[in-house]
Length: 251
Ligand code: PGA
Image (tube, rainbow, N blue to C red):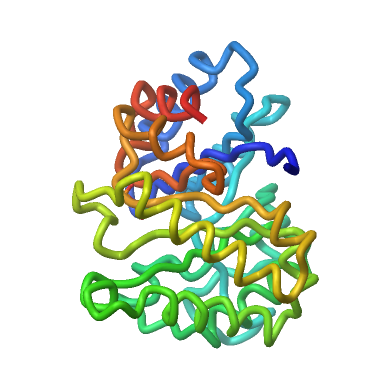
């Protein structure tokens, strides 16, 4: 079995101010005095990134963005490019989060273009995939995830996944308090690994696949113990240092 270092990624979404972000990062850094086995990443809103990067300098915690534009630069009012995110000191970027897909109509093709942009700037994409409740009930989970993965591998090539992370986030579990059971999550993670192995077995074995969707301090361990789950993408619980730190310790 290949060793995969676990990841715990905090997705702050549209939350925080300069003061609250400073306090949260301070408390996380204080609580992480023991080196954790997991690589810890926080993803603040764009406007807070420079300050958070400054605060994280010289620590083991890395910074990521929650999205990037699909274009490189130009007349795209309100957008932020991969180059800008790289320049701000981020190493990671979340792509294709279900809130982007559902609330902002991001298609898998758009996500694939963003993925290519991220890799060109040497940002590590955290590619989110996952099915809605309706799709799960219609037994479409695997088909949905296959299509989400195909869009990226068709456009960027399987090699691009060598430096990437996948996050399986069932849409019905995000922010709802309904976590997938460890078995339900493990089944999908295993499926993702098997599906990728038909293109490249080394990448399939080494890629980190995180679980996301109502991960909390009290359910993290059960999920992270599963053989194909390599950590978590944490929304709500990443906004409280105490909760986030317990999740980091569980990984
Ligand atoms: P949640 O969000 O932990 O609040 O469910 C997870 C996510 O959206 O990444």
